[in-house]
Structures are given as C-alpha cells and as structure tokens.
Image 1 (cartoon, rainbow, N blue to C red):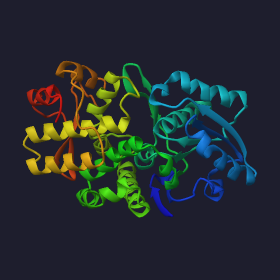
Image 2: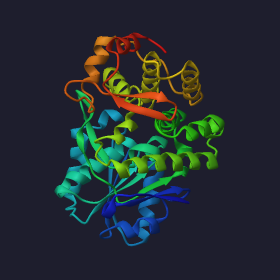
Image 3: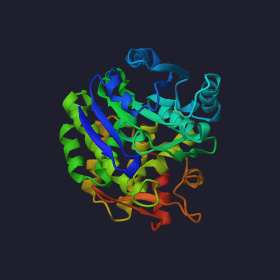
Image 4: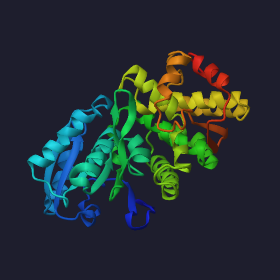
Length: 360
C-alpha cells in the first residue's frame, strides 16, 4: 500500500492506494466520529462493492445505512442530491454520522456536497472506484452538482477525512471509463510534471493492459501532483486552476452534447487537444510537442475530434466557465510539455480558429 497526505494543517488527510482496501475496515475506523455511517453509491457500483464494504464495517460494530442512487452524469443534479438528504433525515442521521462516497466522480461530488450542507457539515470519506475519481475528483475537496446551464456551477470546497483508492476496482471498470480517467492522468504531466509525461509515454501500453505496478505508480504520481497543488491553493485562487487544462473546452462539449453522452474524461481529452492546438497557434508549443500530446492521448484511446458546434456556440458555453473573470474567458494553455499558464491574454481570432475546427 502507498500512502500520501494532503497537507492542510488541521484538515490534513491521508490517501491510501493499494489492493483489497475496501475490505479493510481498520483504515476507516480511525476516521469515524462514531460508529454510524451512510454509504452513498449507485446502481452500478452497489452490486460490486457495497456488500464487501458494509460487511467489513459491520463486523467492526459500525451501523451502516446504504443509499443507492441512479448511475450517470445526468443524475448529478439537485433532484438526486435531495434523495441523499431524504435518506439522512429519514434515518435521523446526526452531525457525527460519516458519509462514505463509494463510486466514481459523480458519487464523490454529490456525496461531498451533501456532507458539506447537511446539518451545515458532516464528515465524509472518499472511496473512489474509477480511475478518474482516484487520480482527480476524490482529492482536493471540490464537491458539487451540475446546473442545466453549466457543469459544476453549484458546490463547495469541503475536504474529506480520508481517500481510499482500491485499485482492484479498476478490474471491473469498462475500458471506455478507464480511458476517460487517463485524460486526467496525462493532464498532470502536461501542466507541471514533464518527467511524468515522459514516463507515461514509456508505460502507456502497460497502463492500458492494467498492469498493477504501472497503475499504482500512475495513481500515486497523479495524486502527489494534485496534493501538492491543493496544499498551496485549496480554494483555486491561483495555481490550482491549472488543474483545469482542457476542462473549459471539455465542459462546453459535455453541456452541448447532453451530460453523460460524452464521459467527462473524454471531453477533457478532446479539450486538451484543443488547448494544445491554440497553444501551437500562439507559438508556445512546437509541432513536435503537439504530435507527442496527440500520440499519447491516442494511445490512451481517447477521442481527439471535438464536435463541430461552431465557434459562436463554443464561446457562449465557455462563458459559463467558473474561471471567467470580468467577462473574459480565462484558459489553461501550454507553454511547453510540463509547463502551463492560466491566461486571458490570447489572440481571440486564433481561439476562433481552434473552435472552428471539426477535428484536430
């Protein structure tokens, strides 16, 4: 088992990465205020892992309330959030009740936001079961729901007590979901860790073949990068926004196509290529670097062809991004592999050229 720590003074917490962690109640018990938990999961994950987790906790004397939600990005909304509140209220859950998010990014975001707002704040634990949630959404305390007009526009920064990444869950993950998670893994190499990008190029075949050692290393290095950034900028006032490489473009794709049609990581993959294209047009990325980015995303089996929505529609949707400041869309662009920048100082015409392409 690998262990990391997100350093946030008295709100610091560990990240455990390894095998058979869901059945290890000893990792969870020290983080419970009392032996009473509500496990929030979905209809896909529950048949696979809910019984294992529940049995481990109940064997340790913990009372477990299961809350099973419908699966999919389309359900990351206020109606589904209310299902969590209903269950918590019906079971008279108190401030000492811990919520456990057992699932991917949607479950983690929903559960975290419920924890941040129920009784004005109850503890929660992240047990992410997808690659994307293990390397990104479970770490750092971003919680929230989607609004019909924009993705993740309603939420809160609220840190978990613990992140428990059991790599065994990746064995039951559909190949498409695994590829979606790889978009976030590759992101860390692009924004701040050129050595990691080099490592990914060498080990991409092992990763796609679910090699245990390679996957553990990729998750560890991804989480280490994110933990370092979060420790310096918890509330995204500066450096943390770099973690949104490809996301402004990607969120526009998700919104336009309908939440859940494109997986989040798929949209981020296409958005990352759009950011690379604009960075190249700005004279920041070389042709060779763009080719390397394209080849790695392709090897991860991510879609690179963004839907042809037209520049005007893209711009309208991108105006809903959380990074917009003074009406100006701020983008995360590449100055080199391993070096990125948050900027509104780009050529608007070059942006329209990127947005006008049907493929890159």
